[in-house]
Amino acid sequence: MRRTLALTTAAAVLAGLGATAYATTPAADRTKPASRPLAGLRILLSNDDSMRAAKASNSDGLGLYELRRAMCAAGADVVVMAPWQVQSGKGTAVTNGGVLTAQRRTALPAGYENDCAGAPSGGAVFGVCLGEGGCAPDSPSATPADTVKLALRGGLTAKVGWRGAPDLVLTGINSGPNIAASVNDSGTVGAAVAAIDQDVPAIAFSSSGDESQLYFPRENYRAHAEFGARFVAGLKERGLLTSAFALKVDYPDVSAGQRAEAPVWTRVGDGAVVYHAYEQRGSGDTFDITLGLCEGDESEGECVENRADADSTWLLGEGHVTVAPITWDRTYGTPVDARRELKAVQRYVEREAPRP
View 1 (cartoon, rainbow, N blue to C red):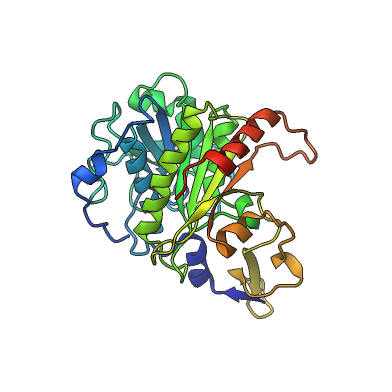
View 2: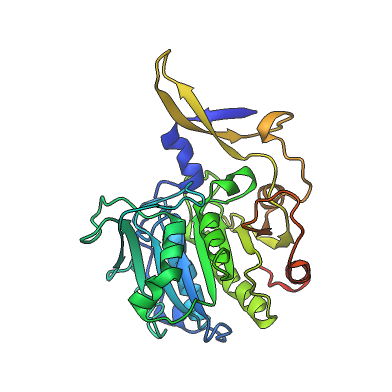
């Protein structure tokens, strides 16, 4: 069964409604990791949900701060350059002209102020807008890919003094999964693709919402972030941080106490979970942009999933963490250049990766 929803309702499935200030976690819990396996690793962090973390649904960047927290706790030096406004659905879009401003955020969301205080860069957070003279609340935003390209092509050097590229680019944690056909639209994935296009390893993280898919609990972000830090540490330890392809890591809903199942190596599904639709107003020239949800037992059309190893099946149907490789090369039938690396990462996911 397919149904379409008004944009204001269905958009919440992809990006939520937006963040209560999260309750302050005791400093000891945030800064006392058992070990620091990411010590010395420089990480650029971006997303497509912005760096605001101000909406009640937790859909506008709260996941970014949870990921920043976990990576700094594991010893990484993290710098954030993220879109000024929510940019969900922007894919790999870039801005072709004009001016970008990378403005540092000095007042961070409550509870996250000191997460990276001991890192060389202090966990600096920058929002990137279009235009000059500073970013105002209503300033138009850079796209996710813009932020990564800016950072890698001079922004990090200018703003925090990093010489050379970071060791890793992380994007997310996105509010809502990026699976199946929506991967092509995802700004979270698009930002990771922009990184590997510049030969920098990248991983895109996305988390499910609660049962309603209208609210994105901090519990999901936190579980994903802490898993993500251990996942990255395992890749680093094995020398598997590669720019030959990006990794897409999606996390199931655990907010009601359910357990996330072990990571599964998947492909991007060939069906749709959410799709765009366009409804004409009467007989005129105006069309409402709507989002449709595939529900129930679809037997035909774009909602059909034909791949047994689809990310959507294992994430939504079975509750597993799903991992899929993503490449910038859209040439159909291109041979896998890094076959040995791909097999090594697959083996790590299937046999050695941390369990949630």
